[in-house]
Amino acid sequence: MSDGNDQTTVRDELLAPVVRKVVGVTAAISLVALALFGLWGAPPDAVQGDAQRVMYLHVPSAWLAYLAFFVTAASSALFLWKRTRAEVWDRLAGASAELGVMFTALALVLGSIWGRPVWGFWWAWDARLVSTALLFFLFLGYCALRRVPAADPVGAAKRNAIAALIAFVDVPIVHFSVEWWRTLHQKATVFSPELNPQIHGVMALTLWIGTIAFTLLYVYLLDRRYRLAVLEEGHAERELEHAIAERVGAGRSVVA
Amino acid sequence: MTDVGYVIAGWSIGGVVLGGYTLRLARRLRRAERAAAETEPER
Amino acid sequence: MSEHPERTANIWREAALVAGKDLRIEARARVAVGQILPFGLIVILLFAFALDPDRGVLARVAPGLFWVAVLLAMLLAVGRAFAIETHHGARDGLRMTGLDGGAIFLGKAAAIAVQLALLEIVLGMGVIVLYGVDVHGIGVVLLTAAAATIGLAATGTLYGVLAAGLRMRETLLPLLLLPVIAPVMLGATRAFEDGLDGVPGDAWPWVGMLGVFAVIYTTIGVMAFGALWEEAA
Image (cartoon, rainbow over all chains, first blue to last red; front, side, top):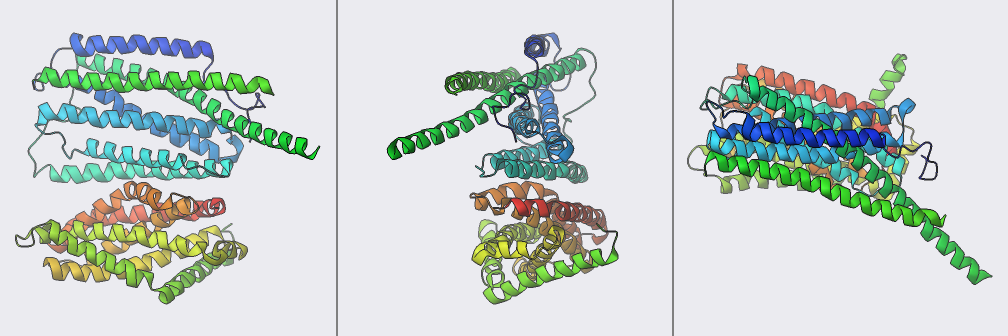
């Protein structure tokens, strides 16, 4: 694997600076638009009232959680496949996972805050919430694994990539089994408003704005987090080289 | 708490988490860029 | 690789060798029987402290409690399966035999499955006796346990080797493993609910799901174990 020396083979940034700035500005603008529509422009829901407005953040967060996981899995696969193996995929997987943890946690907390006024409780064993909770722990485990210091960086990257893919395979299984579990129980529980009812008009528009805004934000943060990983790992390598060079120099002067 | 309270709570948390992460990332990046600039010329 | 029938036959024979080795080590050290099994029984007992034994609560939640106890014991069994490889240069010894990674996976997973099966039999009897559970559909119960056990053993072996060389493996393994096997917990408990005090026929879809899970993760294990085994320092 190349180090910071060889600038041509190590990808320093994901996006060209111009692209990144455009993405960042557009993200900021759409987030403002989301706030305007979500908090004011969209009408309160007929059944849920104003509490519906929390959905405008919850739904995009949940979408991003799955997108981030997908990016981590895809990058891991690209890293494992010998023909496309490159440091960029490993770093991308890690960056996306960190963002994924954030969006998943946000989705869970917002889902709970939405649930309190609408259902009456802070949590319901709804299929979507349970699946998202498990997704959160899958992410968390992967991030914990990445943080284990490894003697062999390539080997560690391979291991992390395999771990990501194994967890990713589990996601549809979790989704399906939890969904099935909760629909079986629907007969026994009181009917509760769904997390994704049919919505039209301004409310649907607001959800779209939210999805776009969050996706742009994710892309921007992904680029920045990737850059950070490049700098931090490069720095660690240089510090090591530095320390070694000092030792060698000191040894030489003693011998001389 | 009225519905509005929950909306405020939800959106505040969203803003704090996303904004906080973005700012923290920016700060870490600035520190890392500076550290890289310091060690790089010494080679 | 599997164009040659003798190659495929070899994998099974190699797996049997590894499984035999692991089980023989267990027969001598008696860790599963002497430590993990009692642990499972204590967990079953402690559940009765946590819940009310006098109001039929235990019988109703018995399936879940049973599988939680099995899950916790499985964590120990997986950790143990890879701990035995760290002594006396066993890992290098195993590497030098040139056994196929997939075969080692199948062998270790099989040994874990056997230990889990024995554990489940004893814990199952414990649950029936201590919680007062009726068994309506023994066939469903046995098939569920078989499918779930294979899934648990496969996933456990996979994550066991992944965590094997790491310094933080004792705490990392549960965190990595438990979310992934959540569907097994879910399916096995639901199937047991139907098979024990409910309508056994309702359980078959869950058994099917457990079977699919077992197949998927056994396949992944056979493919990925070799690479992970190399990386385990």
